[in-house]
Length: 206
Image (cartoon, rainbow, N blue to C red; front, side):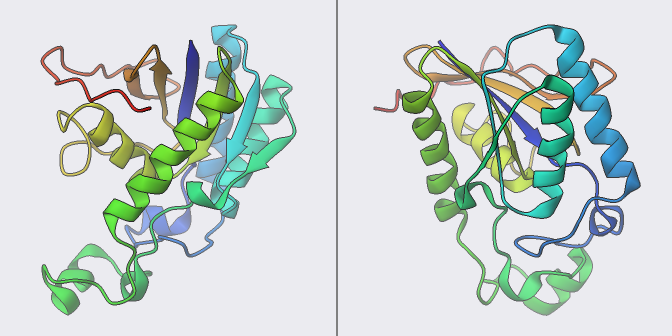
């Protein structure tokens, strides 16, 4: 069985100000670094074996991965641009109210489609499944990417519009003939959020 632990990067100043980051390369702040250390310690204390670590190349994700890799004695860190957050085009840097005032419910100029985000995110899962059969990998990415995957894998029971992926939270997915969510949004306080039992199962990916 292949297991992948999806971790959102720690907090940035733009997170704290509720500004849209997207593909803009905003670094972690001190709170974010502390969050990454807490998550690294949580994973270390679990005592589980991890075989590889991957990350978005954006600095907020990569630094989170570096903190985790150091604590777990993992490396090297593999980066992949398909793990980057959605490009929000002209809305990057705006807060939600400004975005709505400027664009309403209409399209955002230059923004990447959510379908494209999901396509590259699911592609990463498949890449890791074939690269590391029966292994366990950590993947550090972004809230939109992870939440999109949660929505896809849960058949819409959770995901965008229903759940918020916390900074530095961990979500575990596993392949046993299909991708399944074991748990998501786990933080250093050991809280777990499980997928509802009634969630429809996604079709197996081949």
